[in-house]
Length: 334
Ligand code: TRP
Image (tube, rainbow, N blue to C red; front, side):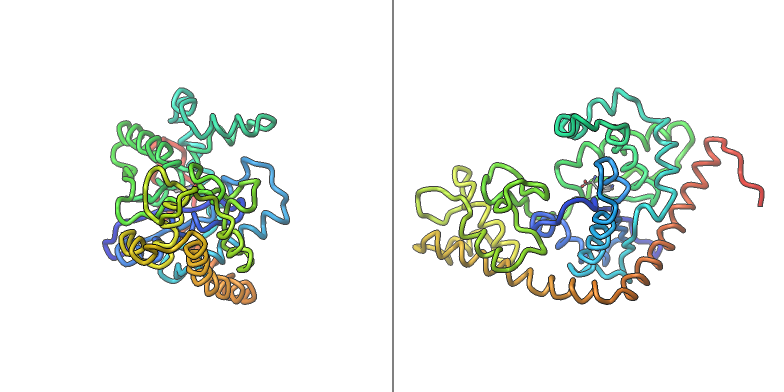
C-alpha cells in the first residue's frame, strides 16, 4: 500500500481499564512499528457490545482508550487510530464472511467456550461470531501482519482460514495475514497470583496495575505483590512472583534479566519491590500527564479521530467494494 510499506493491524477492546500488561505487552512496542509498517489501530467498540455496556460509561471508555493510545506514544499522524464502529465496512464485511465460516470452526474457539462459561446468562450470537468480526477487521485493510497475544492466536488462525477459503473461490481478494513476529512485549502476570495473566477485569484490585492508577496506589500494590519465602532475586520457573517482577522491571527500564539480577544481588525483596514500583511510576507519570492534557484538548482528539476515520474508511471501502462485486452483489447505480 502507501509507500510500499506492509500493513500492520491491531486493536484493543474498549472494555475495562488498560493495565501495564497491555502497555508492556503491546502498546509500548507498537509505537515504533510505523517506521516499518503502515499501521492501523482500532478502538474495537463493536466487539465490546458482546457484553452488556452502560452506554455513558462505554462512550467514555472508548474515548479514554483513544487518548491512551496517543498518550502512550502512538502518533495519530503516523498511525491510523480510529473507531471500529465509525467504519461501517467492518459490520458489512463481517456479515459476508459469516456466510463463509462454518459453525464447526466457531465451535472450536476456546475463547468462546471460556466466555460462555463466564457469561452463562448472556451467550449471544455476537459472542459466537466475534472471531468473524475480527477477521473482517483484519482483512478489510489487506493486513500483512497482526501482533496478537497468545489468547488471540486462534482468532488469527481462523482469519487465515476464512481468507484462504474466500480466495480459493474468488481469486486473490484478501491478503492472508501472518502473526507479527518481532520484538513482542513481555507477558505480565497478576501481582497476586503469578501463574495467571494480569487482567483488565480481575476482582482483586491489588492484582493489576492500571495505567490510570493513582501513583501511590501503584507503589502500594508492588509492596503487596506475592513472592516466595526465600529472599533471592533470581529469574526461575519455581519463582513466578519474582520472575514476573523482574520482567516488569526489565520492561520499565530496558535492563536485561542478567543486569537486574546483578543489580539486586544480596538485596532483599523489600528493596526490589520498591525499585520495581518506582520504575513503573516513572513510566506512568508522563503517560498520565499526556493523557490528562489530551482529554482536555477535545478539538485535537476530535480532529485526529475524524481524519483517521476517513482514512480507514477509504481503505476499507476499497476492499469491501471488491468483495461485494466478487460475490455478485449488485452494484449501486451512481
Ligand atoms: N479481540 C481482540 C482482543 O480482545 C481485539 C481485536 C478485535 C483485535 N479485532 C482485532 C486484535 C483485530 C487484532 C486484530 O484482544
